[in-house]
Image (tube, rainbow, N blue to C red; front, side, top):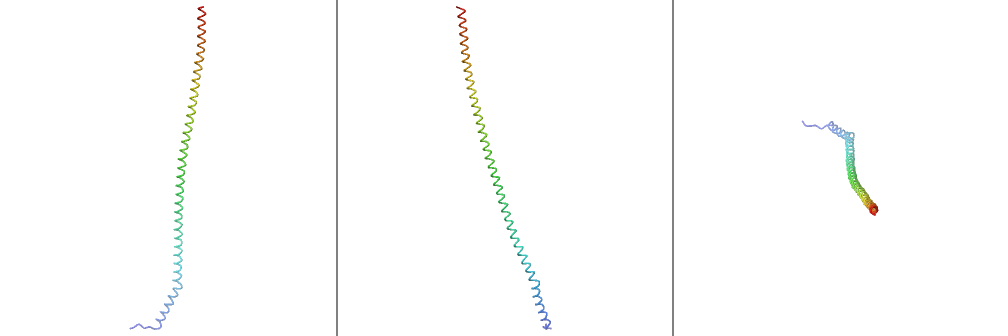
Length: 142
């Protein structure tokens, strides 16, 4: 029993070819087109997300560097201010010491001057008292 090719086989073959052509035209091409568009959309969004993520990381790194620089600058300013304050404090302290030393020297000079003045006054008074005593002694003897 051989396979017989009659009109139904050719009709089925032509129907199958028409069916495949119509399925390709109606179903497969639109579905393939939609899948291709989705893949393009996905790839495009993936590249956008990747570039946005990279930009965000770059921006974050830049901000961290900027913050680090600002902290370093603030630390340097603080150190400079501490050094300046210490120098100003030492300068003021030295000025005060010099002022006190000058006052002390002035007061010592005044004390020595007063001492000398008192000695001179006592010497004059002594001379006066000695003269008076001598004159009284001489008056009594004479």
